[in-house]
Image 1 (cartoon, rainbow, N blue to C red):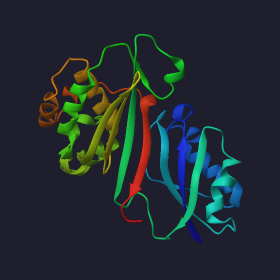
Image 2: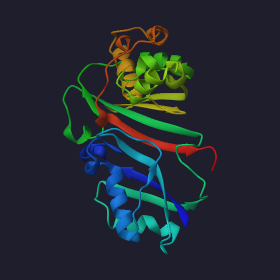
Image 3: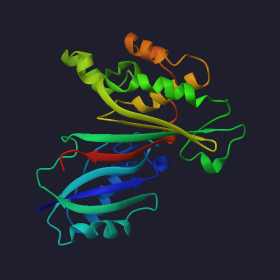
Length: 259
């Protein structure tokens, strides 16, 4: 028995997410089906990041155990012949049998893209949120500095998060489950695409999309940059910004500290 690690990229538009409520239209289901066909085994991968419906990935990580004779570094070629065009295994390799992607320290990096123009361009909208307002990215950059560090991000999470519901039922202090550390936020503009790149040790349900929506409101002049700190202090979702559409979000990279 060996454990195989897959680096996976996908266009999330046609899927219900990594897992998703509609299991047969989830990324995980499609990959399980392909590996099972290739190996003749009943395979269930363990994914690192459970991306939401319509969210893309340039690098999600999953592992599975197999007795197959397929060489570890050849699995990606075999599986790509069985997968649809909008899912690709970028690489495959063997890892220690004890390695579990959700139990390791990792740096996760997401990018949220905003197409800021007077007229929409459908070729740019598959992975970006279109707005026709003028945006001041200098103010967004100033505001983003307040996010760096270890904070309680409960103001930036969907209140319907299963994690929050579970904590309430079990009497766990919410800050124990909503505290995250943000290592870096980089905001750039290339032509008419604004990219918000954010790295941290983990993200809550809709957290990046809400942060992006909050920074956008600041960029549009609706709030001052320092309002970010006030939002965090209030610890209430109703004080933060929009939840921007899922299609603008891409899981860009996952870097493990332990391997």
